[in-house]
Length: 88
Image (cartoon, rainbow, N blue to C red):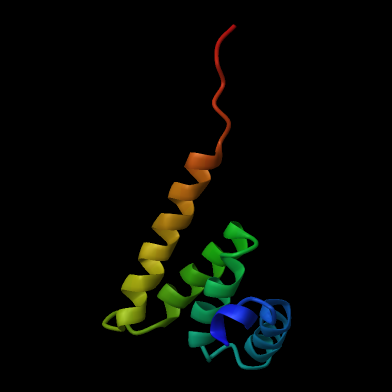
């Protein structure tokens, strides 16, 4: 089931979680989940959500470490995708 439907509801989930976050900005955990969802389609938006989560979450939360690692991975992927320019 998970493999078959994984990602099929991402747009709806991003929309609903985004609405919930606008209504309840104190629910910082939503930023973590939005970071996960956005990482599949827009790295910059994903990083913004992870940073917002890290800024608001208790420092001892295990998800803070996961969010920081996700940001690093997103930044690594950006560097890897930059085109290689060969001098003429």
